[in-house]
Image (cartoon, rainbow, N blue to C red; front, side, top):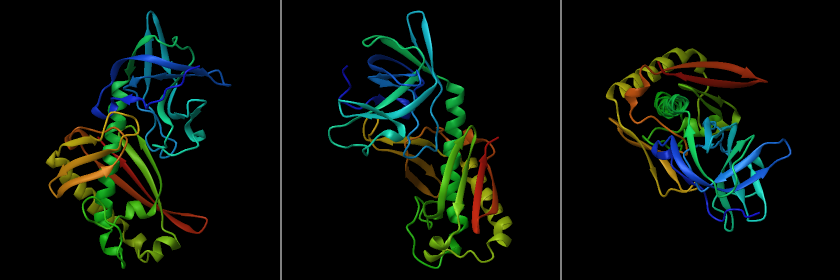
Amino acid sequence: MTLPTTDTVVSYPSGATSATATVVHTETFDDGRVAVLLDATPCRPVDAGWPDQGPDRATINWGDVSADVVDCVVGATDGIRLYLGADVPVRKGSEGWAFVVAHLVEVAPPVGTEVTVTVDAEHRREISLGHTACHLASLALNRALADRWTKELPTDALGSPNFDQAANDTSTIVPGGSFDTYRLNKSLRRKGFTTEGFADALPAVTEAVNAQLASWVAADAPVRIDREGELLTDRRSWVCSLPDGEAVIPCGGTHASHLGELGQLTVTLALDDAEGTPVFSMRTATA
């Protein structure tokens, strides 16, 4: 059994939805699924470290056989054992480790086979719109909440106090949108965020966020992914040339190519209570 010694080459950051590749390793797990490792892939895996964007839907084809990719996850190997998802014991880039895209299928091609990987392009597009919407909404939210801080805070890509970074609890990308939750707890208040009167201010905050989003989408700013290389662990960033300035956010996801693709982007904000801690949520949706 030979495991790869280099990271998987990935083409999804450039928008690719199909590619030919060579099978370099297969491994069957206890649940019957088989992990297929390729030298290169257009299929984006889910990362257990930040699982906001789920995996691509795809098929692997060779000869007359077609296998659905039932899951696609980031894995890692030290050359002795293959670890998948949350079981990976080291951080990306650790010396002596190769980080790989593991395509989980029910039937696998033999090692050395040349295959074609085809990603569901429409699902990719909808997820990409949702991820771009999420980044844009976080910037608009940070700006709308800027006057509620009484202390200095690290700023976001446009220079606003980064509420999203300081308070985000969960983030989930869905087709055409996203859902984020923020905990307005004691830790956030100690950082200088003013929660008094927040519920009453929510309609005005919602209006400000949606007005900012409408302005940015109307400008149809271009979006691109900058990356340091073609390997899975090479650093990548979302870059959007907004009228307010170029916004750069580290990100390993997929995205729209320009903001006009988002159509009508709106957010819905809500305030709830979770065991005595206020929880603020933001839903984004494109239309």
